[in-house]
Image (spheres, each protein chain N blue to C red):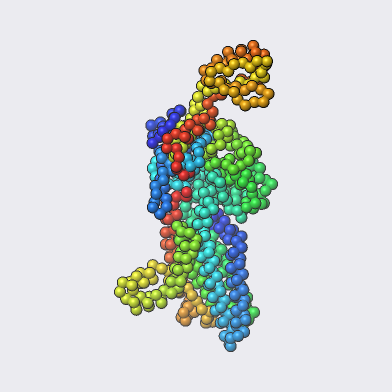
Length: 263
Length: 332
């Protein structure tokens, strides 16, 4: 456990000293705060406008950060040859991969917490304490589960591909994953072999549509996902889905990494 | 498959193994074939290398660039999987975690996390060796002092010179207090002072009872530090043994330097005059009558300044073995 924690801590430290990540974070914070102005333009929907735009900002930038960090994670260790110093130590290769993943997840948790706090502060300024409720926390939790899968997918590609290609693949998976219901509908309409391929793709790729909340809340008890109000049960099974899917993808990344020659 | 000169009980197979307690590191018919490029071109980087390193010795792994040294060491460290053969560290097959606990490794031209300070980096290395925090701090302090980087403990590694990086690399290899230290080209790219620092450190490790295996193509460093050497070329082991056993005691030539008198003594057959301004320098071939020549020179009024017999050097052995058949073409 100490070894995994050491790799995770080092990965987090690397991210914390990366200026590009700070730039992305500042962009995200800028977008969230700019929602105040958009709120002023809307009529009686100012809180909802701020919440929706704010959550969009958290969603967009957390995914960008997850892909950016995830695709560079293992590749950078190989390209910079830092892995040559680490793996001869008494650490298993799967522990190294898991430590890297945990480090990125810690980074993303920190980023989402910061963005969430700024969004909450923005809502407080506009709507007072009533505007900040449990629904915001639920929405942020769903976005965290979303990037859990995105990070794992990015890391999986990073185990055998260049950052550019890994980034493209991960972005592709994200875009298709977000559109799973549309792709399913398309598969029904197309039918035949093409339809089967699309259905297989939907079965294989993560259904990221599950994690896209809007900001609507009902007395702080639920968050709206695609118009349907959800509670703890929905959060529970989507969390299990995100962790389960990530575990499978991560296990594949570990298997690939386990057999690699570090020339 | 092994070719070359085996001088002290080494062999290509299990038959020549040293007794178990003595051997801390063993390569047994190690081979690695890479498939490169679009057409999967076959490149045999290492073609069956066997040698053993005994407890407490400083062992030099010699070879020209592209000989297969780094690939062999990476197979011993579990970074590359052999296509054939077996690597053992402290009696366990690589990569065994128990064995990895007792070995320290410095890769060739090491790259470290440049955003870390030496203290942070050594703490990280210690944590990977499962050391508790207090012990990590104690060892990091001791090692930073030992490698002469105490003054730079707060500076990020990106601001380190090559020599400093090499020293912090050795420090990280020692964090787990290993019994065996493997250094891949530790002197490459260093200036003479930096090389001396690393050489002294290797000798100090040897004196403190650690087993050291290091690869290099810098021959004077080997002559000054190693108990035994292995010479590898073209992915094959050419010879292994003590320096004394590899070098022939036979005199190849004798260099005589004189301050000439009125008449220069006649040169014996096969001798040649060497360049020199105020002196007469002569190289006499093996078997020449050196005593006779010196007598003739003294009779002619010359003063003898020096007489130096030249025996086979490690460089001669290295060049001969490295230039042998199938000695090129393999990437290291």
